[in-house]
Image (cartoon, rainbow, N blue to C red; front, side, top):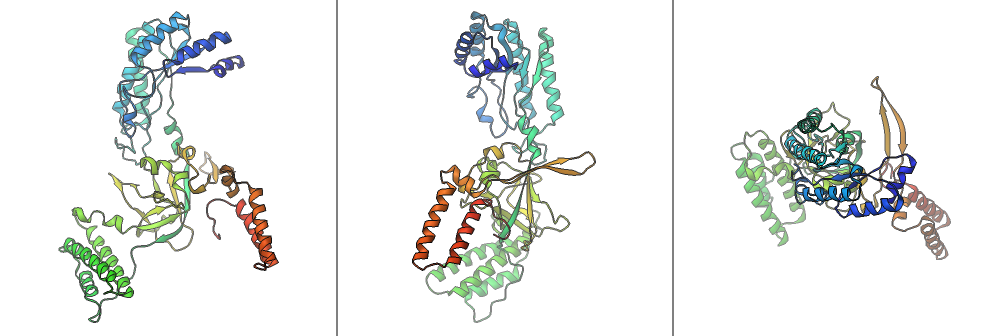
Length: 479
């Protein structure tokens, strides 16, 4: 508070917004001590609730803002201190990513009446801060789904002006200046995360399985028969038989009645049958409930050169959906279905929910991984992701490239900001580069004296260790 008040001496006009009733006494006391009349605002806690993931953090029990009773008491307290003219702003906020325009309308109607009420009590605020909550249509559906919004930015702006204007005109109150804190909507589109694929774990095989012979175990023969006979008419029955035989084979192997080679053939036949069943299921007008998860069960795992916890923490924490797609090979039809696993050792480090036309899908259409560079883009990550990202498993900030789009459709690179190096993140956890290098040097000298390493090898090890400390925390091609 003291800093905000003293900043007025620099020609600034900081407005101190009262968010808790007890803060009024602190502001009054500090203002008296400094001899500075403050610029004040109050945040009202609206009864109106938001809409979307954070709806429960709003309404009467929100932890932010003053209730109607506290607003009235605040006005009387300021009047008693001859500071009522210092009240210049009314603020409210009903949460982030508001998905339904009705929530905005209700909040604006309520807040507008509070603004008018302040004037009727003798205060004269000239600014109304409508907070944030302007949503981003992450999935493109234009609905009130949690990753979308059922309104346009223009509709939102029209409602903001209309509700405030109507309330003020009815009461004969001067129109205020309107400010917004719609941060997500302003910055989400500015950033895209690009990561490369390091490898893939494929469940499905492109080659058909070899048929079982009369000499093979009965389980293999039955699996082979299932594979040959799968059709639309028996697809569900075939799947049930398949699960039974897989369980039977596992028991036989554990008891020693099935050798390792036969077990491997069982697995290959099982997945081949599942793949064939899935191809049939995709053509069905209605998918039986017990076959709905087959697509996810057969998804490949693409290993991405990223940390979800660093670069897309909201996907892990609140299941936020982001548009994800390959950024090249777009002239090739994707033939695989997959999910992404990151570099961390945490099983939650994955991207396994994707945008669909009507709902959320568990797999993403991808191209077969050939070993050549394959780049994936995650879009609309400009809001919160970078600032929320953490050093889980010591994966640091990523490299950043600032690109400017020109009016003629071309682009230019303004800045390249290097991400964290290994020694940077080690410093965060109190491991110093110099001490680490010295410790390795002593260990190498001990090994030299004992004849466990040559002079050439020791120099190479020391050089490579120092290079490793200077390198990126993510993998680079050739590592």
